[in-house]
Image (cartoon, rainbow, N blue to C red):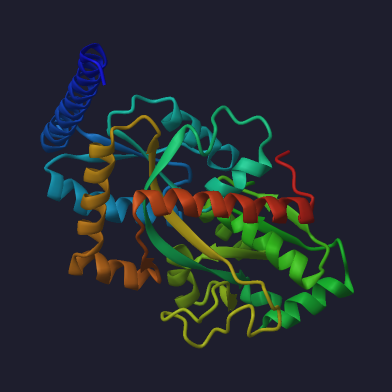
Length: 337
């Protein structure tokens, strides 16, 4: 090797080392800045945007977790109920908000359904939003007015099949988890009935109690007090196993509908550009809140199970849920309007 070649090789090597050093220094600086950002956060109130009305399962979980997180973080967490369009109004608001950790979407499994149900969303479910963690898994419970006289899921199905097209079922809104559960039930049972959407679970349950709607897959967290008071009759639960707070009520699978199981989840989501350090801080604070004895007890009374994931796992879960929901939307012929 000539002197010139050797010099060139050394300069190339030194240049590479310098570039690597600068890159590592930049990464170290970004890491330090991220750590500092997370340590200083939050310096003002945080807003939890909830797509459904007060008293809905998503709202109840959001308020339960917000209370504990707010105390731990030393800041107020405000609940902002933004209703409409199956949760897409709330999701769009968060997707377009500042990615600074102060605006958090607390949504349900309907978030994944909306990606297929609404063809012209103002945001991209995967690209514009990122998961922090799931918070809770909640069984839906098939409820009816006791005056209907149906004691079992099979009795309801037989009654509807005897008079197709004359019955209706409520949901907490087009694109909600309660809507998807109802469509799974309709496909599995082969019944013909009319879907009646509302702006939240409380309105749907009120109309079932009043008799204007025939059934509703209500989140157990919202329906349990009314079931215990005898205002609603529980026929089945949507999960693969029975709910611990309603052990006498069979699952929809046990009641005769294979592959009819469905679990409603509630999770925290933020704009995709949110710094990883802030996502990590929110994730850690949410897990800390869910681990407290007080929150565990409150969740148990609601019939909700704490359900957590890492941000990466939650994002992968959302993508899988989108694929599953797309198949149901196609099979059921669902449309947003």
